[in-house]
Image (cartoon, rainbow, N blue to C red):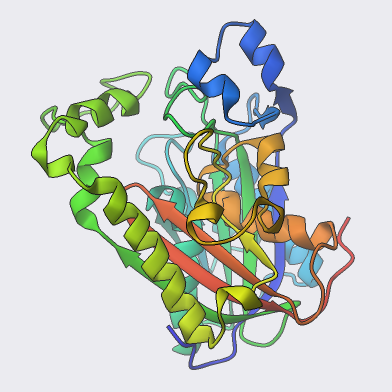
Length: 339
């Protein structure tokens, strides 16, 4: 969508645990052969820190970097991929209270790995409508066993733990959001559901058997042409965001895609027409796929590495099981000195 009001990124931040060398996990027998050759060198692995706790640390850092005490933030959107430390508990309320205070409305989003970037579009609407001056976007997940086998959960990734945050403002920031798009192809949701009947209680399957569910679905006629539809969704959403911004792929300096490496298969940045050098894979190979947080983490990384400068356009792209897609174009106005 073309934004009908000024929208800025006031700050980006993250909190990641120490990274575990992949070679160490391989030596411990944790990583199957397929996942040893995806290009990852190490993976961020938390010990006792939960997703919401890591999100709070990232959110506080974003506020600090923006020089804000949070008083202008009326909405907190917290995105996750899974378990948040307690059953039947409003994680977003905790994140909001621990970052900006008791009065901000907090909502949790679960669009899988697309949730973080998709929340930017929701936030833009609330700022444009005058509901709030600023919105704090957070993500946080700990992919600990026995809930999931982070090393082998899906064919094309290894999951890392961490929290990330983006502070959006209608008043100003280091970057301007030029355009943002979301789209979906809900007919693809069965890839993560498989063929088993619905249950009524949580925790029936540990670790979560996503690969087995995918194999079940792959044998059905419904699955035919799925990758083409996923690729089409990713491409059309990105093309729409570029068109709304009035730019082309050639105008983009850097692209932030999911921190996923497919080994022998085309990467997201390849599919979209960008090079690995333009991507944030140099970060991804060191930390893993941080669920819904890859895009906020990637933008922060580009700023901290001073890999972008005033006038540069950054394209952020996300996709999540379901399937849903997001893309946003941001223009760097200045490069803050974040440590």
